Structure formats: C-alpha cells, structure tokens
Length: 442
Ligand code: HAM
Image (cartoon, rainbow, N blue to C red):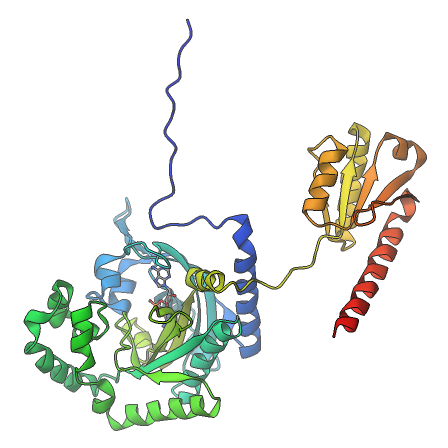
C-alpha cells in the first residue's frame, strides 16, 4: 500500500525582514569597507553590543512615549522572568557599555562605532524594514561644538562620497534649561488647533508634544509650518553652541538647511539634531541617517554626567538609493585563474593545486563537482576568468598541465612544477598591456 505524503507548505520570510542575496553583497561589502575606513581615519574603535538588552534600557533612553518604544519594540519575557527587547537602535547599548566598562576613565572623548542589525515593528515599505542594519559613530565625553560639526561632516561625507546627492537638515532641540518654556509655547499654539490634528497627533499632544512637528500627515505638516520654533527659544548656552556648530559647517562648505521640524523620534537628544536626506528625486526626500547630541543620556542610564554626540545611517536605505541612482560598487579584483579537471585522479590533484594557488595569492575559481570540461569552460567564461588550468589523466601521467587563454582560445602545455611561474608571467604581461591601453586612452 502506498502512503501519499501530504505536500508541506513552504515557510516564508517574516514580513518586513529581508534576505541579502549574493548579488547584493558587493554593495554591503563596499559600505562595510567604507565604514571601517572612515572609522580608522577619524579614530573610532569598534564596539559590538548584544542584539538583546533589558527592556528598561530603551524605555529610559529612547523614551516610553516614543513610537519606537511604545509601538515598535520586539519585547518578551524570558522563562526566568527577565524583560528583554531586541534593540531598536544602538546608542543606548553603546552608552550602557561605556558606563559598564568604566570608559569614563579613558581619555575623553571615547570614540566608538558599530555596525549591526536593529529591530522595529514598523509598517514595512520601501526603505522601512522590521530588521535593518545601521552603522553609527558615537563620541562620548566632549561638549565642544567642533565634535558635533565633525559628526555632521562624517555622516554627510560618507554619503556624498558614494555619489549620492545629500543635504544636511539641522536644528537645535535645546536642553533641559530652555526646552520646557518652548514646549509650553508649542502646546499653547497647538491647543488652538487640536481638532485639526490627526489621531496620532491628538495622542502626542500631551505625551510627546515635540513630535507634533515631524508628523507626515499633510494637515499636521501645514500646522507645523506655522508653529513656534525651538531656535527662537534657545537659552544662551544652547544658542552659542548651535552657532558654533554652524560656523564649522560653513567653514567646510557643507550644504545644510536649518529645519525647525527636525526633532528626531528619540527622546534623548539635546542641542544639535540633524538628518541627512537624499535630494536627487524631487519631492521624495528620504532620511538616510540622523543623529544629535545627547548630553543627559549617560547620567539617565546611571553614569556620571557626560556629554555625547553621535549619528546612525541605515544601510538598506543607502543601498536602495545607490541602486535607484545606478551607482555601482567599485569593481573588486577580478578572478584570474580557473582550475578545471577531468577524471577522479585529476580532480584530487587539482584540489590541492587550487589550494596552492589560492595560498599564493592568485584570484582562483573552480567547479570541482562538475565532470565535463565543456561545463567548466563555460563557467570560467561566465565568471570572466582569463586563464583556465586544465588537468586530465594525460597531464597527470606527463607531469604537465594545460593553460588555456580564454580570450585567444590558445592552449599551451606547461610543466606542472612551473605552473605558478607561467601563470604569473601571463598575468603580469596582461596587466602591463592593460596599463598601456589605459594610458593611451587618457
Ligand atoms: P534613527 O533616526 O532612528 O536614529 O535611525 C537612523 C537611521 O536608521 C535612519 O535614518 C534610517 O536610515 C535607518 N532606519 C531607521 N528605521 C528604519 C527601518 N525601519 N528600516 C530601515 N532603516 C531604518 C537612531 O537610531 C539613533 N540611534 C541615531 C543616533 C546615534 N543618534 C545619536 N547617535
């Protein structure tokens, strides 16, 4: 009796999450290399914090009434009763680590960077995912506006240098000294327009008045355009600090727009706040990154009062914009040699030849599971490899290999012991030829 197996349904990717396929990896590698390079130039050390933290870390830092904490966090209770959350952002974890590892005793500012996944249960759409990657730079322990300016410059130049059209939108959100008076003025203004606000903003009116300014609803935007501005309510020290930041940006010719509606979606900001928006598509501005000063956060999380400033950039969004603008990563070193084999003995020998060539620094490729030479040559050609080393029964018996030039299709018999020398000779004369062609073209 035959038993019919029920067809199992395929398990799918979780909504809002994304596989990063091999074809896209070149973009990711490009950005990761660039992050490492910027970090080295500007003197930032890498810090990796866990993806999961105690929930109160985010409640206290990002703020209980923010959308991120109140609506978007992946939170759970462990069997042992611990309340944990997947991190929705990385600054809180960095500050926790700064305090926990006594980094306050190091020369200040302590300059740290990270690159990792964040989780927000947001409405998925283009450039908005539930698991996404950010890299961020944080400078902890310095009040001078030069550091704010430097962070703005790093975030701007990182994106600009990729070939994207970007602009800095900057504001000051004041501090504990001047913000309460401003919030009073803001509330007073919105009090008269309460009925015109969207339902989310009705809710924000009491809980998070500042966020009324960056609601995306058309009517709320219109109201925000006429709302009182924080810059007109800054205390002397915040004003002086902000002017200082802008002076450095002017000096370096960084294109920025003063934007009173930049208030950011996290509660920890004080003074400088900015976003980097892409401007190439008229009317479709998307924020690729954002940051700001957070002078009270170290103390809020249990450390000594310590000023700090930082930013984060979303990698998916940057890659999306690069692809939209047809900007491709620089070509990586091309494959130079393909090792092809025919027959069991030849396959064994070609496996060790492959390892030997790889160790010697050749950019080498193979397809050991393929048996036919035709298939292997086709693959080598598809991969754009210039030279194929062919090893068959006859070559093993003779102690030779064939080197096939895929461009001219000429095959030459070479002594197995001289294979590296012969390959290097051919590759070197090819690179000299390419340099000459390039020079002629200039
Ligand atoms: P944020 O503005 O919430 O700031 O996020 C920074 C960037 O992360 C955004 O500009 C965007 O590119 C990316 N991003 C945010 N949410 C999503 C999402 N759902 N899907 C895809 N990308 C997203 C922060 O997270 C702060 N910790 C930045 C900071 C560092 N401030 C000071 N230091």
